Image (tube, rainbow, N blue to C red; front, side, top):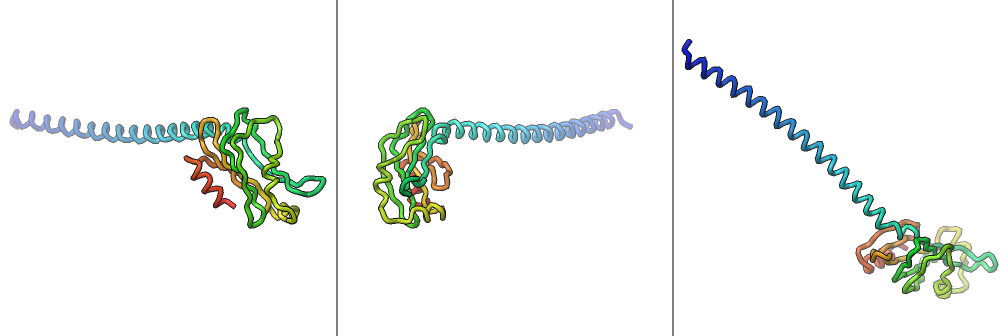
Length: 178
């Protein structure tokens, strides 16, 4: 056997071993990269959820509902803002069967207990069987408002809370929610 051939054979073998090691290292790097991508994705999702929860902190403490007055059976529209900060540009909507009644408030302050929205109650007509509507789940309140950080929200008739990028979008959602 020639010395040059043996050296070439050993060099080729060493090259093959080096190539195999490079392939194994590349696969390990790809797997590590994939695992890190998954971890990063989970972190980004967690951070987005944390930001959303922080953003919704005030809005989650703002709600409205309807109940009937004990003395005369007329609707009482109640509002609660226990966030400690006022809400602005408030539109309150009361759905009564197929009809919807609205009124607006420029600002509603925070309070320790719920308050009646008498201006909303004033727009509700007389002569409706309120008790029947309430029993059927057809007497409900919803509202659109802007929180202290400038975010627009819809507290839907079913109690759900949804953020919106603008007042117009929140109002449109309120109109379609009844």
